[in-house]
Length: 431
Figure (spheres, one colour):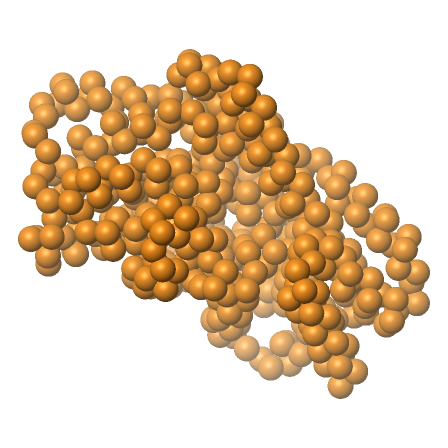
């Protein structure tokens, strides 16, 4: 009973602080301080200082600002234009035609970005004007972009996987590799949905562009070479064991700078803008992580994770029922918090329960990332919905509705991962 009262008090404090507009990182630290000061004998001040310093000085976390910077550099290059030119000739023959550029473009950019918002903004700037001009239905253009851009979280390198890896103390390199096959599977499900829709509604699909010969298609594909090389350099160095995730992030930054210089878009202003943009984003993430680390310590002293794990274990839930409950919990939480906050806020409580249920933590990491992807397109706090609203000036409810089919496809993906866990675990086991 005491644990329920303590938990209720901390939850009320959390939502009061969040509702009053306090930054998420400071809110987490504030709730942790309240909990430690009121319900434990450990002095809160020195515990907070030691924990925040420890979380900020983590070598593993060094990969995060580097991948953020890499995405910022590429965001300011001509990469999007080159990708469209390289992809368009190959998708004209598919049902749905150029709508697949949203799927393929997001899949490719996700492999060099790590952020769903950056993927959505970059690919959207390229495809929305082009597809609208050619007469493709707005609901399919925006919906496929909103769904596919969430792949920025799943296909490595992924910022949120780094956050989970640090919180769960599992190999970030194995998480990255574990996300490859599920990411490609989701992209295939998204494209399959577009094909079925196009076959059922042929009148809504504009006519194909002029046919190109194989030689012309290959000539246009040369625009994809730089990004393919960058993806190969980052993921290949991790998979072969040549580099750790942090070292691969440094390779990605150097590669992005070279790519940007080769395209003629690297100058003093773009370099400074990318550096400042990455610094702002990382500082926000680092503050959240520091607050979450202190909250985890505080809950450990109070004993909430242990009591919760004992409670859930006492319910006797099977791993399958537990995962369904956690999926519903994260989807609900995603209506109010962004993905990184969801991960860092809950891992200290959830992981002991998941470990006790015998669920593989690499597999669970991919499971959580897909659920967080679903939260990116659920109102009221779906980050991708906000990005799309800014680009299209449409109502957020309309955007959420056209993205809804992709939410359903992610549910299907979770079921497939449960039935075939090797989709996640096979590649990491071969490293």
